[in-house]
Amino acid sequence: MRSTLKSLAVSLPPVDQWTSHSPSDLWPHDPLRPVFPSLQAFEFNYLYERGPLGLLFERFTEHMLKRHAYQLKHLVFPAWITSDYFGVLVSSAIHFPNLESITIRSSALTMTIASQMPNLKSLTFPTFEPVTPSIPPHSFPSLRRFSGSCRCFSDILTRERPITHVQFDGAVFDMEDASIFAEGAQPTWSDVFDAIKQFPMSSGPVHHLSFYVSSINLSALRKTLPYVRSLKSIVICLRSNPKDINKQHSAHERFSQLGTCFLSRLPHLRSFLLSDEPKYAYRGKRFSHSRDEKMQRAVLRGYEASCPGLTQVAFTGTCVWEKTAPGEWTRKRHPRLL
Image (tube, rainbow, N blue to C red; front, top):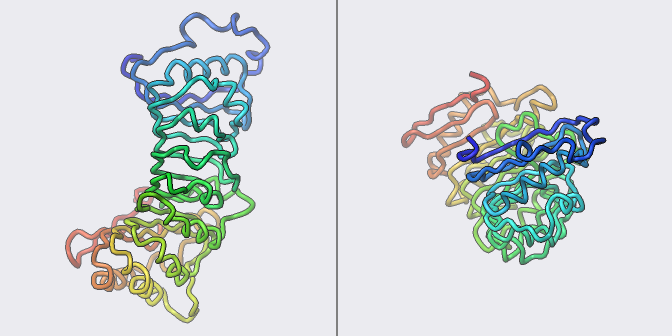
């Protein structure tokens, strides 16, 4: 098994009595110094909300990172990790030349740490604190994916980084239990819009965008058009019903206008997903139009003319519509609801 294992995730329990012993008393020659010649992904967590690790676990994690540094492609650190403690686990002399993705707290990322992983392609901040990482603009020249707070994105996206995939504040179509919900300061549409305006700074076109915001006026999306014309997919997660300037408009009118005034102007767009999972998690309610299948089918018929390139659409987190043929849409319920 050791010779073929490619991914290892370890949850380290808080066993206080172990921390009072010398590592030599508890550290046999091999069991806690394993070698995995095929290991590519390593994730470790500690069941305390914050570090540091007990001395035994610290030595184990240090060994795992040092021994497999050259071969690792994916690393996930606990959300409480700091730059100082990263230096305890990984000396500045150790480099990860093949590392493609890392999950690490934004405030822990420094110039020294960035230099240890020069070929990184995916960067994830597990907490959504609007803290700017201390990294120079020329680091991570191969970065393609970013996931983290929209409020620190302007310091991540530079002309040296060809970012194509952007995920703000943990937004995914099925975000029923996201840590962003516990954040005191929720991202506003203004925060998201300021981040989107940075897209032209990427050295490559941004193709995929997902974001979470408490509420949004669908008409406001039109203001993003100068910055998002390269998008192929959009996921929007909301905590309240989507709004419009004209409160008299029905849901059918709102979504029809969204198609003609916004979606139709994105020539590469293939997928547009609107999710009410945050609203359901926060208030126990769905969008007011979530069960109106007749309305949704009527809007999709309109999209056939205004947005012929669309092949996937969602108006609620409970289902996704997929185009199976011209003029034919199949409704697929969320697996959790089947």
